[in-house]
Image 1 (cartoon, rainbow, N blue to C red):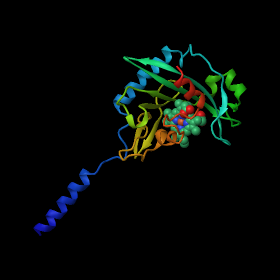
Image 2: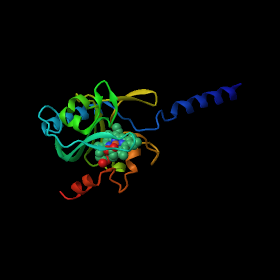
Image 3: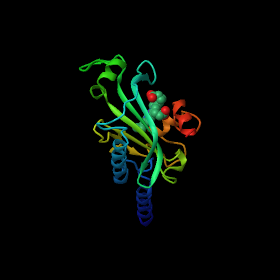
Image 4: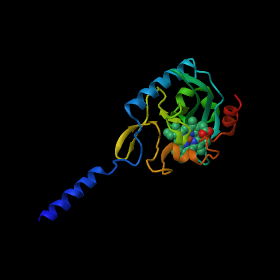
Length: 200
Ligand code: HEC
């Protein structure tokens, strides 16, 4: 009987001690706060907001569901830190016809607000933030600067932070996992961005 109780209690302890998540915490209070400050800095630098500087929208992403996109990239200062930022505006899927009409590059150029779905951002943070992945801070904003949320391991999570860094080596998911396939170890797909980053 005593043995049974011992076995049962050690099993209980074992379950309790198991890591609750495969990933390091994301969408934490700190991440959300940082994402809010980052948005303010993006508005200050006219990367977003009412006095935003436009770039040319283009057809990008993988066919056949390619999206109309717009890119901005530069150095950005947030507090004591200056890092490289890439802002990708995602308008509708090319050719998609919905309540807002068929999405084309021309229409997006004429009325960006109507077609903007999301803004995905990579910001290179200070050393030590995520040394395994070039210290990139990943965020997915709604057009008004608030954050998208998604269920991560059953919990509704704000999309900001180390998305999704595994606790076990290279077993990542989300933004980090997919951007690892960009090659070159910088997590960036567009070669023009890499060139710009390396020559400034
Ligand atoms: C399934 C793969 C995949 C996932 C997941 C993904 N991306 Fe990307 N991302 C791409 C590809 C492919 C490109 C280049 C083509 C394009 O723009 O669609 C890209 C481009 C970008 C760029 C432009 C810089 C670059 O890499 O050239 C940013 C910024 C970006 N993604 C942010 C994010 C963020 C933030 C997330 C997570 C919320 C994310 N991405 C998730 C595949 C992915």
